[in-house]
Structure formats: structure tokens, C-alpha cells
Image (cartoon, rainbow, N blue to C red):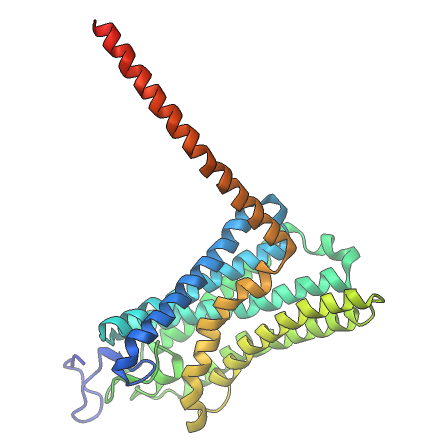
Length: 344
């Protein structure tokens, strides 16, 4: 902690650095946790970047559903990168300090991207509702212009709403303890360190969380409710089972994501929940970006086909390298021989 000349209360000095306590106080587990989360982070990046690349490269995936899935992967790559590199650095080096302004910056990007994903998931569920429940009107309603507006609204809305909260938080004074009992800078742990009046900020944050977590969650549940109702009317038993398999996996992941967010940001901050907040944060901040590429994209026939074609194309390019190298060597040898003859 670096004290400044500004005073909070009595002899307490203003805090300019926080200490992230992380996942535990057992140093012997840090290397094991580092390796575990490093693998998770690499697989998360690889899976989501693969989805983005396939959606951009394959013309058959230029549809509203895959446009939304590409943006989902982009969001998850971004917000997991907002917390994981710092967490991995802390585990590897043991340096857990973070400047106050850097902490608020991390919170801004993480919360903005999470808020954007909440609404993007509701947009994706609405897209599936139109495709399944109103197939005749789907093409007219989900046109390219409307899709771009929906996605732009989720990104802009997420960043603008959290910017207001962060601007309010930047006016707070922090003094006393500077230890954040978390592995990243989150709203409630930071609030506990402030010696300013935070009542207005906490009410504003609760309203903001309700708008960006609870409302899209209810919209998503309503869309899936209509989808399930439509599926039940499918005459084919095989068709119902296939539709339910896909729908149920989506609904489980969405429920875990929204459910943990509701527990962390909307329920009362009791001692029992406070101890579990880090566990819940791992679910929505670490594990969800890991499993979403598999649940939403890599199980789809079109994505698997695009991946198969990409792999075959790479194999063709690799197979051409051998003959190409032989051709270049022969060409070089011929050129050298020709130069020698000319010299004679």
C-alpha cells in the first residue's frame, strides 16, 4: 500500500493500491492452480477464436445465427482475457498488488462485456424463437440490418451503462484495509474498502444489474418457453428428441450463467454467499467461455462441416509443400548449373 498525503478518517491514509487475495492462502497450490487455469485459458481462446475464424471465412455460416455466435465468441474471448492474464500472473509470481485505477479499468471492461453478453444471449434466444416458432417470417424479420443493430445495441449498451458506474466509483475514497477477497476486481469487494458513502452507488448498481442481468434472463426464459411449447407439438418423436437435446443443453448453460450472476450481484451479501462468490465467479467468468463453443457451435452440423473443409484445405496445402520444396531445389540447382556454364 502506498499512502498519500490525503486523509480519510483520523490517521488513515488514502489507498492507491489493492491486494487481490486470489483463490486461497495455500502457496503450495499456486503452481497447480496456475497450470489448471492456463490450460483452461488456452482452450477457451482456441475454441472461441476457431469459431470466429470459421464464421468469417465460410460463406455458408454467414447467417444471423452464426453472426450472433461469432459475436458471442468475441465477447467471451474478451472478457475472459480481462481477468485471466492478471490471475495467472498473480499465481505464478505471487505479486498480488494492483493499482486502484488499474483495478477499476479491469472492472469496467469485465462488467461491460458481461452485460453485453447477457443481452446477446437473449437476442440469440429470440433468434431461435423466430426460426422455430415463426419460420415463415424469419427471413423478413431477421435481416442483415436488424442483426447488426441488435449486436451493436448489446455492445454499446454494455459499455455505456458500466461507464456511468465506474465514473461514480472513481470519486470514492479508499482507506483502511486494501485487501480484496477475490481473484479479480469485482464491485462488492471494492465497495467494502471505501470509506465514502456508497449507498447511492449501490442502489444504482442494483438497478443496473437488474436491467442487464434479470431482464435479459427473463426474456431468454420466455423465448425458450415458447420454443419448448412448439417442440412439444412436433409429431415426430425423433424430431422432438433432437430438438430437446439441443434446447436443453443451451438452457442449462444459460441458466448457470445467469443464475450465478443473479446470486453474486442481486442477492443480499450474506456471509454464506460471500464465501461462495468466488466459486460462482469461476462459473460465469471462466467455465462458461470454455464450454459455450462446444454447446452452441461445435455441435452444429454446419460448423463441423466448415471445420472439416478447413482441415482438408490445410492438409492439401501441407501436401503441396513437399513437391514444392523439391521443385525449388531443382530450380536452384538448374540455375546454378546455368550460371556455371555461362561463366565458362
